[in-house]
Length: 397
Image (cartoon, rainbow, N blue to C red; front, side):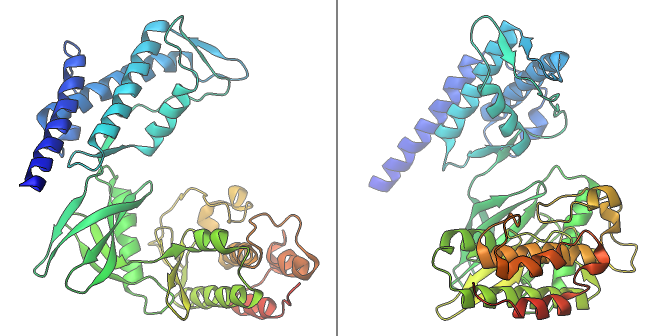
């Protein structure tokens, strides 16, 4: 009885929050973008999101008349300033009220960043001063700004498990859940519903490529669901980035070397399959932490280049802090093994030091770094075997 009563009270609070903002916008309600929010079961909330979407689009459209700003600031009129402030306040209030409910949501990453920027300069009176070097705002006409972030229920013949959002990128969301039959945690990667055909093809190719790999150093995937465009994969304990940053003061040289050698083995295997990863990053290298050891596994194969194949996407945009900056000029389509060994050199340096910048490498690492990052590609490590031999020759400082 107590739990039932608490559920009723919680539901009433949520419904009241929706009703409050619905009435606040009465007279300005717009159904222009209702179809983008049909995944929310509450019709008033659908209309609220549609109205907020309209308000943001109108305000940003007005702001674009003054953008881009270059070295000077620009004046943004008082009325749209106030409307944008109101929109942001309602969005934030709804996020707080609906958190942990069936209606919880997140704001599209691009729009969240733009709203955060706007909060920094908007004024309720006299208009607002748009900062210098502000770019034009991208307007979403067919893409939802508010994305369902609720606990999702997946069903199979063995159990019903709750999915909890643990990560989100441009193309997909990653959830974790505890399987009650296998008594293990798994992760589920789901493509966003606003992907273009080409982006969805890339997402499917990532799964396909990983499913063909058979190595303890590659993240395992277990099945693709065409209906939801999602697949299940191993649940990992940490990214290389988080693990090294959290443990940098206590990691011994020997433990760092063991991690590094696993990374090299992983990429040796990937290259043996005629594949270049192209997105080498401490966030795409994951760790499984056992009682007696740590195992490295490589993930995120969305940018793979299949050597001597026409399946690799053309005109892929350069990305990644660890990638060779010369790719900006050469073009990402021309990525080759010498670019991969460049990125791996930086990764191994990060493992050994916890630092991403190689500018002030200590004496025992100078030669290793200088060869791996040499501007003359012919002088770099030509493959992972050369890289491994050099890495194994490094002595503790």
